Amino acid sequence: MEVQGCCLCKKGLVHHFLGHGGSGPHMEFLEQGQTVYSELYISTPPVLKLRLIRRDKDSILQHDNARPHTSRQTQDALKQLELTTLPHPAYSPDLAPSDYYLFLQLKKCLKGHHYDNDEEVNADVRRRCHGQSSEFFADGVRQLVKR
Image (cartoon, rainbow, N blue to C red; front, side, top):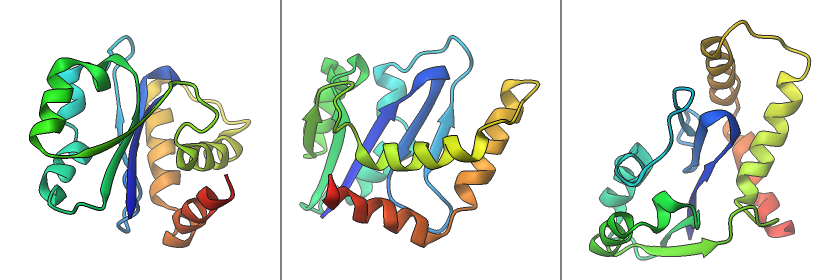
């Protein structure tokens, strides 16, 4: 079974952990002050990918109870796609453990670095995440069992 999830993080970074297909996780960086809303959420590449694999009954979409995830528009879209969802409370200690693994490692890499603007931060985050090996992401998935 493949667990797929979405996590909305501080500073406007939206990270979708959808596995690692050799190019790193899918990431979108929002402009400062921009928020995620239902239309944006259901049109992101990971959700679009779920549309393609929706016939795979073993796929589960994990997301928290943030407004874009619980809106009528999102719920209707997910129902139409016949997706099974695994809800969990926002800020739960079990919130997307895969994200905690990734962000903990990323935090270690970025510690002590200073950036002049958001574009530099975004580029460094992308470079570091996309530079990780498949084994790095596999370790994160294996650690889910420990939690």
